[in-house]
Image (cartoon, rainbow, N blue to C red; front, side):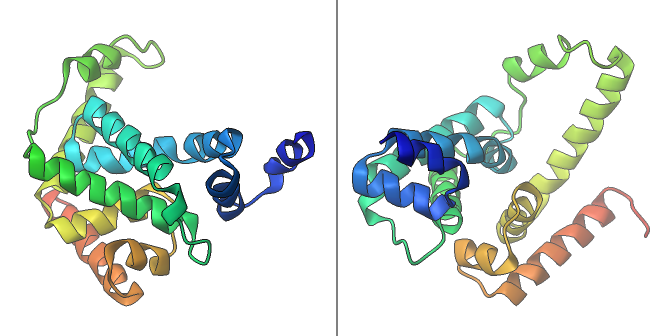
Amino acid sequence: METARATKGIMSDNQLMQMFADHDDQVAFERLYHKYKESLIRFSYGYTFNQARAEEIVHDTFLKVYRYKKNYDPQKTFRTWLWTICKNTNLDALDKNPLKREQSFEDIETEFTDQDESVLEKMVNESTKEEINNVIGTLPLTQREALLLWMNDDLSFEEMGSVLNKSPQAVKNLVHRAKLGMKTKLGGSK
């Protein structure tokens, strides 16, 4: 067992998931969780615009990975499987609780307790971030999903296509249209 744990540092995501699925290896599951948690939260935030809700969705995503580990197909990439679960969990959450575009008190509280930047710089950064999030929220859902995947993880267009059930070229087009829409709505002229 010690040898297996020692080699996990060089194991692929697919191998880690297979260890978890076949042997209920908790260390393998934890490594996958810690590797993907933050990027999935950023992705989910693009659906919810609420940090606590995004974290809850990621928690639900990993519960599904845990619960359905035996359904994992090692012939496919773990990343694609995980992002598909997260996307579907986000869509389910939107169906149950339609999008409310408001900032939570937790988000506001943490913004001004960080002493790394001056308050003015922080306000400008948060204002810009909020404006970008608002524009992302106005994009058609398929463009938003493609853009969020493109922004938040190192997925290939082929992997993104698998998550979104679209061809790689269709995903490239969606990302391109989303970026053009963002540029137009944010007032960019280049």
